[in-house]
Length: 121
Image (cartoon, rainbow, N blue to C red):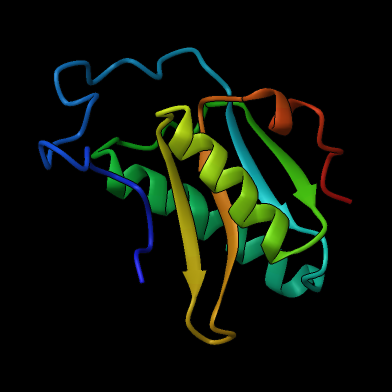
C-alpha cells in the first residue's frame, strides 16, 4: 500500500522536479481525521508533513504557515486524496501501520473540498 503520491504514473518522476521552489510562499494544508484521539491526531499531522517533504524532496521551512483542518473519518480522507490525484495535485498521505489506516495528508493545493473543511479542534 503506498504511503504517499509522489511520482508521475507515466514517467516515474516528480512533476515538480524542475521547480524546487514551486511551493515558496504558499500555505501547507494538513487534513487530519476528527475521529482520532488528540494524542494520535497530532503526530499523524506531523507524519503527513514529513511524508510530503520526503515525497517531493523538499526541505522543511519552519517559518511556513500550516493550516490544519479535519475530516470525519478515513473514508473522507481517502476521498480528498482521490480528488487531489484526479486534479493532479501534489500531496503526501500518511498510513499509520499501528492502526492499519490512513490518518492525515498534506498538500499545498487547497482544492475547494479542503478550503471548506473546519479547522481541527
